Image 1: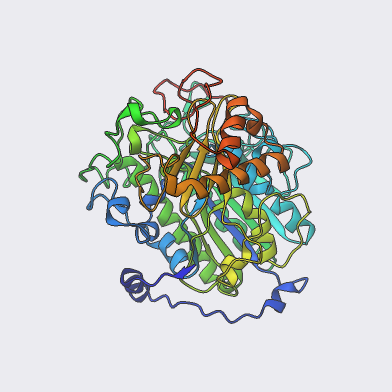
Image 2 (image 1 turned 60 degrees about the horizontal axis):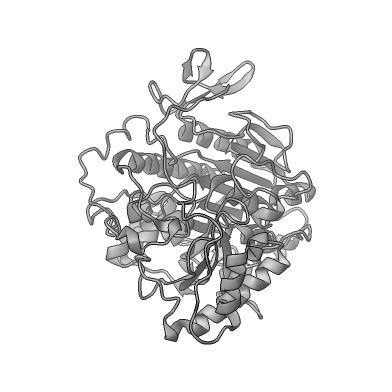
Length: 526
């Protein structure tokens, strides 16, 4: 864990007139029943971390400027949160697909135990979310934006099962709508085709465009609850496809020249099934426009907190449910263990406990969020969490006794259908029913093109991470570790001697679903 102190960030703070807030508020204050901090979470959908300035600053130039040194979008407001708080360099979606990642985030449990292992699966009624814990503690709670944890309803405003988010009138179950409006009957999708909601962006403005609309609802909630303790989560449906955005963002980056990502022309023959190149084009101008619109609205929300003098006692978190490869490895979207897909931004501002400029380099996952934030707020969890309490990494700059730098990440699908991995701050060990195990060394090969699994120098790492995966599978009931091929590969990796003998694939070598954005028209229901 280091301190982030770059000249560009200092310049931004000076230019904006924003001073770094010192750590001054004593811990005991936040243990009192009526004086705990507010909690505000801003979550985006399918967001590549390299589009944020604060993340580019943590990377080498080759990794930071994946689409060209001049092809960047500036994100000063999100960067401000990082500069004045903490940034996690290795925060992973526990499953890099919408619903499972969100389920792990709100519950602190692994996807298979929620039991949301793929999109459009209902979250179990017995799940206790961080919002429910805080609601029971007297907090006013609310949620707006995409939920994606109540099955197939689309958009399905205000799901009946609130999971602790009391004010959920502007929560919709799923979809990537571009325009919303209020009506006497409640919110609805503004763009209409044949009497039904559509994804059209035509006519969108700073009041109706999804990101603006939901940011305004967030501000309304903050103002309404400014004198209370509150917990609010806003889940923006962008920058997920369709890649469209309102003016002026729609044309703001049209003149920018984008290069092919450095991994775009990777050799397909050497790639495992979960990283094979796919057909399709990539374009960044509208994606950048969505990111810029998001950052501007983050700034609007922060300004509301400042005006109401709530910044000193509000935890502000910016994160995403999963990434988007945007042409990296000649792929799009998510669902695979590659950085652009699985790694997500996670920055947190909490001046009472987190020193400005903190960087957390240990591997964390969305499953770790609930125990971490609840403990950071001096509250008690419901005792159901399976993730780790990483609060000391943020507040003390060091891990608690017995801490292991490893998080577990799994693909979608059933026991014989996808991959499973153990990630550390440096390594990724990935097993699959289709391929030999892979060990990625992010220090030696940040492009993730080489397999170090059979490298003799890496044998201790393979042993340790295989043992961790075996223990994880047993403790958290992940039946993927009982797949015959995965089980055999893990056994050799953990304790085997002599030459590795590949086990026959248990399924045909077909690329996993979830990685390609199709161009077909979407059927939507209002």
